[in-house]
Image (cartoon, rainbow, N blue to C red; front, side, top):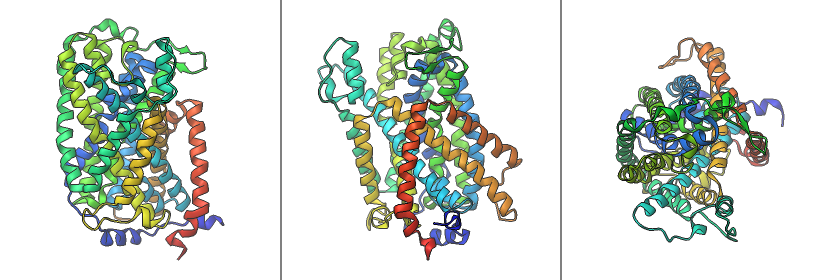
Length: 487
């Protein structure tokens, strides 16, 4: 295949045709879109990642990690907003890069968005399982078999800590089952999903405000000392704490900000995408960044960072200060609230698959078939649910988190570069939302995202390399031959 084919671009006129021929129903207003963004962000970061990032890498300086991640996200968000106003189609960074950089790069970004969304849903499913088990314990149910509640690696580690023989078989059954519940909701339809999401988002925001208002009275400033713990290198050569730990934590929690990206995947179901998508992108990011900083300071002030549970950190912080009633309320909110995070992530992934299939890069019979009654891409939704449930059943939360973050960071870096390319090549293109000082904004976004990618460990990069090689192979074996740009 020659270079011209790799760099061939989807004409902007073709995107307009996609909008006109879309079978998806436009039912989402700007506040529903904002709720989708907040729904993906709130929960994924506060209920899930604060434990891993603070306990293992940043300590009380987790608040700084959220500031760094938020800054990188803010620059990328402005780039997304400009693209979303020009191309109000679903597909996110994949669709934008296909019209600017070229087909191969678009495929590569789309392939890595699977890490962002599918692995993101997996991470949240594992955390949901932790909160669900904690809820059972708080309700007096303690006799559940451990081999049904943990992935094989975690089950082995837990057994060895207790001096017990590791189980021969182990599976995280609650994590697998909740993915199927969310899959059922998504197959039923976008309007029903949006209504469900709006209710759950309201509950989650109330829970987050509750954490800050109640928790602030129990903050012990001694738990913030030292604010940035001294750097430690473990036996495997992995660095913890120090400034490098703050950066690593920023890379890990970056996944928690993908809500604004999820908004851009809903463009073809938005009532007024040109105005509402940029509004929802920026609003959801600003709201959630402020909440992240407040909650991270509250949690690390309530209990020492080393005592935070990596699966259910918020509930563990309240239990540590004797507020078991508050821990129960937060656990209930998390059990309900994390469902909306999975809902948004799996919803977004199926819309990206739908766009790739329409372009011929994925089999259309599987990924572009719309249900005649529910008007949803039901086949790809079920397939995605099956894969995500399987991975959630056997994958530790930390590994899933890092894979999600590196895929997200890569996609955000590419979109910052793509918006610069489009501004240079088509300066007169109508841009309803135009970023001021774009070279500076996009350059900072590109730099921040690449910096955070390099803060992640070598094993995560190795997994990304393997994933990328598989994606490239799929492109040359199937996608390049079936692309509609061949015609």
